[in-house]
Length: 319
Image 1 (cartoon, rainbow, N blue to C red):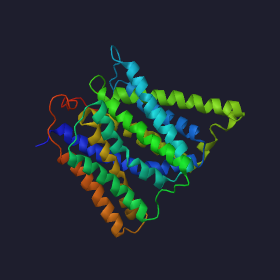
Image 2 (image 1 turned 90 degrees about the vertical axis):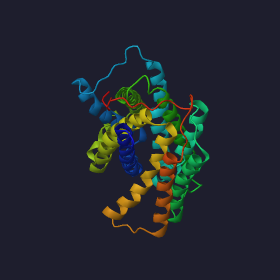
Image 3 (image 1 turned 60 degrees about the vertical axis):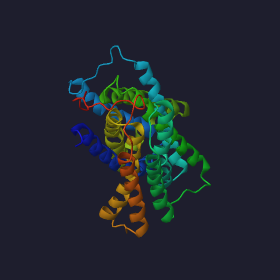
Image 4 (image 1 turned 180 degrees about the horizontal axis):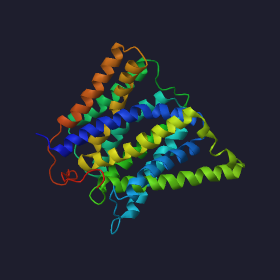
């Protein structure tokens, strides 16, 4: 019988995939109405403020004393700075569907980096399961004529770099999970994102003489709704969840759950938008789910220092 902490991790992983399933669309909505840097500034201002309130009241316990904060600051260069900058600009030149397809390759990249850096071991069947899950995502988008348009090479290149940035973050965050609890990692990277993206946005407006237009997008209800979703759910909640998962399971296993976002988007479209579910939706979703299950069920027990130990302490997301 699996311990409660690992059961919670699986539940949160599925919940996180649900949020990611809507994030590409919401990001596309936001950057269609505002510059990518403005979008990121508002997004991280909201997420950092949302976490600062419970931190100020002591509801979230943070303690950085005597810990390798410098390594955590370097980690933030990959996520959020690298990942979100590349994603925002990539989606300016590519579609949200293309973003979903390319994001599916993140688990494969994570597996490669985790094996090289963390010495995490994955069996041949696990590797096959990870690629099976990625293929399921590609299959769905390709069959509905939403495949990658290779003429959008700038957007495609940037979105591929987001995969590398997020894979690197997953691996290095996993290595820091013994020194920091999930809330400490999340709060610091959100703070770095807030300061960096706000400064970059203000500098851009100042140099172009458009400071008075900085807050203009907030008057658009669609932009405001997308920022609320992206700031609170797709940034704050997702970051907390991701960091919690990385403290409970190997980076390669945590990453593969993200491909469930495609299954979520298909189901949501059918339930809320009346979109037709076809045979290729069912086949692709089955491949994704089979890949996720295979990654977690077909492995061998780690030995020696093959991977970081999975912690079964009683710390919650607040530390």
